[in-house]
Amino acid sequence: MRETRKPDNPQNLGQALPTSAGRPSAVEEFRFLIGEFATLYPETTSEELDVIIGKILLQQSGYDREAVTQAMYEGSLYLAACPSGMDLSVYVECAMAQVIDQLALLDMVAWG
View 1 (cartoon, rainbow, N blue to C red):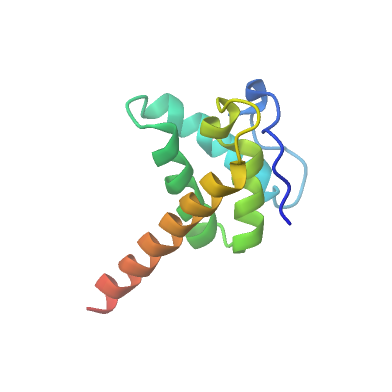
View 2: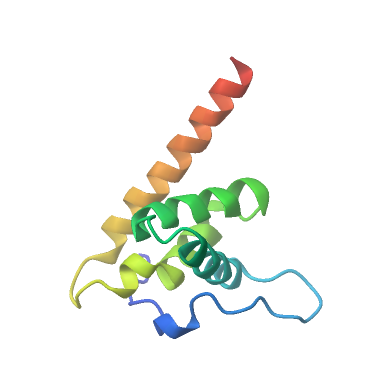
């Protein structure tokens, strides 16, 4: 069963990617991108940002679905604002389903 804890301190969101050699973790990249996109596109909802960042991590950064799901649990602005006791897994499963559906649609259009 997936961990359903609240994301880390929202102050950690949008922090710079580590400068050490090697690839950042999916969580680090999610947090960085969510902060950047939230700043650049303030009219975008936190739910939309989760889906956008999820697509980027899966399609462009090459993380697997499990890594992106965990990154969303730990880096989502939406989840950071959720009240205690909310079942976070329902939100993340729905957001990840949107990510997969939108990527599948893009693949179909590209082949169309």
